[in-house]
Image (cartoon, rainbow, N blue to C red; front, side):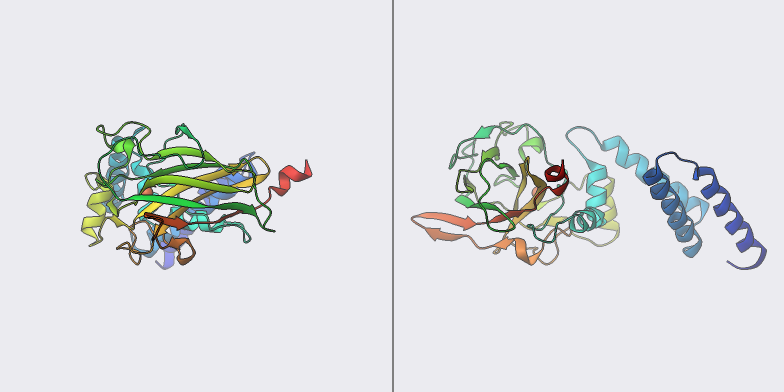
Amino acid sequence: MTGASGAHEDALLGEVLAAFADAPDRRLATLITRLVEHLHAYAREVELTAAERRTAIDFLTAVGQVSGPARQEFEMLSDVLGVSSLVETMGSADEATLQTLTGPFYVPGAPERAFGESMVERSGGGTPAVLEGRVTGADGEPIAGAVLDVWQNAENQLYAVQDPDQPEGNLRGRYLTRDDGRYEIRTIRPVPYRIPEDGPVGALLRQTNRHPWRAAHIHMIVTHPDYVRLTTEVFDADSDYLDSDAVFGVAPELVRSFAEERGTLRTRFDIVLAADRARAAR
Ligand SMILES: [Fe+2]
């Protein structure tokens, strides 16, 4: 836009920014004023019409309306736009295992499980597999008593939270590392799955010629009081969609091969946590 119209748009932006300038929380002031600047620049660049703004509002309204405790459509929207992956990767400590998105299917309160215990609570098929490894600090020191909160999908592609036929704790578990930092999880091999397509985010994918598949993976959140919390995923090297994961979660350093050993498929995923310096300083 040029001339008088551009001057008016600049003045409007200035007014809006000034309206937010006194926010006592300075971080909030930064977040909101930079958002306003980018939104205004976007609307001007694409010459957004009133009808398109209305469509966007209707879309976001629909995303909110299908969201609830068991359906996190907003989380999924952030995921398919690549924003979740961007933010998690930016938040990764250099020395630690790469951080990835949580996704919409994490539910707190998974059952506590012993070293090597199976998290399969329903015998519905699937290929038995073991995920094992060590949790260490950046210097290689083993971390005992770290909690691995693990969740994955079943052979029918669904997570327990999506599937009334699975026990609530199926393919979920909280595992503690031993004194040597080791953990071991009995499970089944994860399979690729389609993110839910029956809502507005699915419609967006169809309209933009995108497929809804995620490469096969196991999620985990690793915590210990002295270390920075880590959310990550392990991907199956033989899975489809490693190159076109619908939520942009795959990174080469998180891909592992399953190999048969002593009659069982096993894969090893060692995890490095960053020391929590803020805590150490207290
Ligand atoms: Fe997932």
